[in-house]
Image (cartoon, rainbow over all chains, first blue to last red; front, side, top):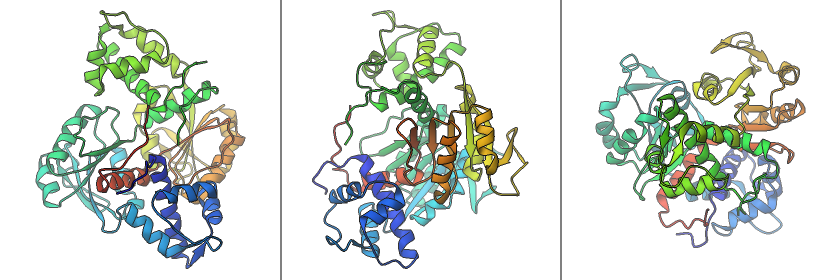
Amino acid sequence: MWKMEIPEAAIIRLSVYSRCLKDLNEKGIMDIASSDIAEMVGVKSSQIRKDLSYFGKFGTRGSGYNVLDLYTQTLKILSLCCGWSVALVGCGNLGSALSCYGGYKERGFHITSIFDNDPKKIGTMICGIEVMHIDRLEEVVKKNRTQIGIISVPDAAAQIIADALIRSGVRGILSFASVILNVPAKVEIRYVDLIGYLEILTFGMQNKNWKRPYQK
Amino acid sequence: MWKMEIPEAAIIRLSVYSRCLKDLNEKGIMDIASSDIAEMVGVKSSQIRKDLSYFGKFGTRGSGYNVLDLYTQTLKILSLCCGWSVALVGCGNLGSALSCYGGYKERGFHITSIFDNDPKKIGTMICGIEVMHIDRLEEVVKKNRTQIGIISVPDAAAQIIADALIRSGVRGILSFASVILNVPAKVEIRYVDLIGYLEILTFGMQNKNWKRPYQK
């Protein structure tokens, strides 16, 4: 669909711009310059223009962007128009925090089911959603036509859960486990490795001359 | 210190290998082939050898690696030998989950202080650590010689908190806010943008022909 190579970082930033535009729209602001968005999100305005250029032509030179129009376009690019059903697997401390996180819903991500294997948790409610036994995962995820799964189970169980999610029709996985999961090419996967991020910090802090490959 | 360009992804994987080697060492396993580590963490063994080659020569051709030796080397490379003091700012659902996360301590990250500005939380204990008012951040972070800060406050407060952490001597920041923070070059910063990750998934799921730039 998009002809140019699009760096992943540009898509994450597009998501940040989109959330900023949502706020602006809710405040009743109709037009905005890229320099104002830049100041709000903390990047250079040339970066914003470059990022947007991957996806088409937006705004008018000199008069900036129409907020509602650009916001709607960003939702379309990020495929956020119609809402997404999300299954959360594993509700320890982190899983519980994730299931109660209000920010998802605002962007169209609806946690429609939560699974765990701890008998004490099954049947309890977490922020309005009943925790179900993992044995019901395939049945429920198929029934809800859920396409995104969030994995926050111990490392040793992560691959089994990923396999079950994919068998049930999930095409996107966000994993908080610290093992690399084997998934077919048709499945998008991203990792949130909290320890890994901290160790990137410590490596960078102790190696200030670290040569990093050129990144677009 | 390291002469070659080292991709960030190689450092995250080194962190994953290091945690795997820790488990192996605790199980009393003394030697291991890269193919066995590969199977445990879910990457190809050629990838492991390539990743390790950025940091020196390890192991013996044919007989693999000494587990304890390689584990110790990975800790050294990642600067994890001596422990790190971490300050956590913002203890909503996510912050509380992060402060109770056992995985940090195992890798030498010790959450030594927790801050919030909600009067109801000040003085309460979260997993053994007392929540202090944000007004005390600079005093306590300086006193503890804390070098790493985790920011899990609302977006609007994130820059103010980052500034206060840096003034107090913090050199590494992990931010869960979805704004890009302005920090001096001497400070390492990484973002954990949960909504951004989900939106990368939805973009990728709807654009299976997405051309991604070459990544080492």
